[in-house]
Image 1: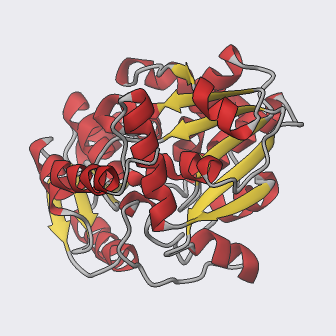
Image 2: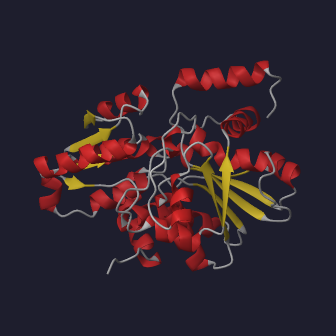
Length: 331
């Protein structure tokens, strides 16, 4: 019988990963409050995390839990970018060999960032599912230890440490808005937050472009979706054919799901730059885009939105900001 991650394991992860991560700040967003009628809105700033995204939490928890023999063999993963970078970062810090399998769909700047951290990169296929098949073959041929992006109790528990930091500072939070793709982030945060406060309302925000988790929830099993280009490219990818944890955890703990368009994501990115001078990737702006476009009623609620990362190509980011400014700079 599979063992689901627990709150105790999230606390154990918090102690294990402390040397590898930053405890990121919560920033009040007063102007968003006036726009939405919320009681308060705070932004959990994982865009300031080591490696530029929350993924280092799960990667560190998994890799640091390995015994000496496993660490000597080295680790392998597949990724749309941020998880691969996190695995490469932790492996470099601990002197462990790392191989990261990517698809040709992954942006070149993400590939280069992983290589710069010393990992071996293998690029094959045109989707995360195809990168995963390459990873499975190399895992066997090279004898490496798998560090999957989301569907692992240790990865989920590592991401859940974000909830501990939020609940310590804002224990009476009513609504948590979390980007949703493979589900490791939402599963970990939601499980921990709801165990502490069962009344908290968990909102998953998915891409209109490729909502693999939502399609899988509807079908009751993992569903393949076409990966379309998105400004929130780190939310692309499927949930894995043999999903054992995140599908059921998201089904159990998510109270509401929102779909966000590309233009709404850009709304969020521009707002964060214009009003807070924050540079975030598209995936980090999905919750802000949802709030700005009134996709959720938060009137009178105490809200926390997760800014999941800042990994975006400079040229692409500047193009988006310039386009918004030329359109009148609505933020």
